[in-house]
Figure 1 (spheres, helix red, strand yellow):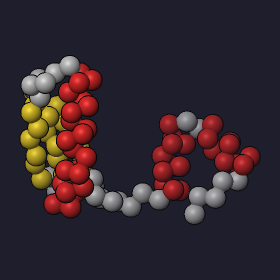
Figure 2 (spheres, one colour):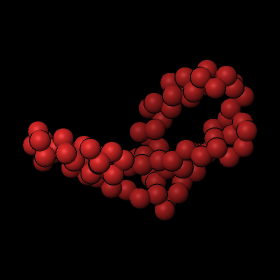
Figure 3 (cartoon, helix red, strand yellow):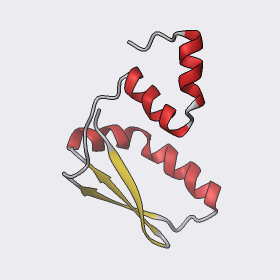
Length: 90
């Protein structure tokens, strides 16, 4: 899974850091709609977007099991629910 990271660089500047050109291409598919909605939500239409390659961003394949384990760290009760319901996380 290619990844990217958004950072607020300034009051009117957002830096989008991406790990590869593939990640940037994926982000470009939804960026127009995302930033249009975001600008309306925060009522700031002067926001500009800057793109930057960042090779330190970790790429990893997120499986259902890994995703579930991540959510268990946030909410340990999910583990009890898994024990009770025996979810198929393969």
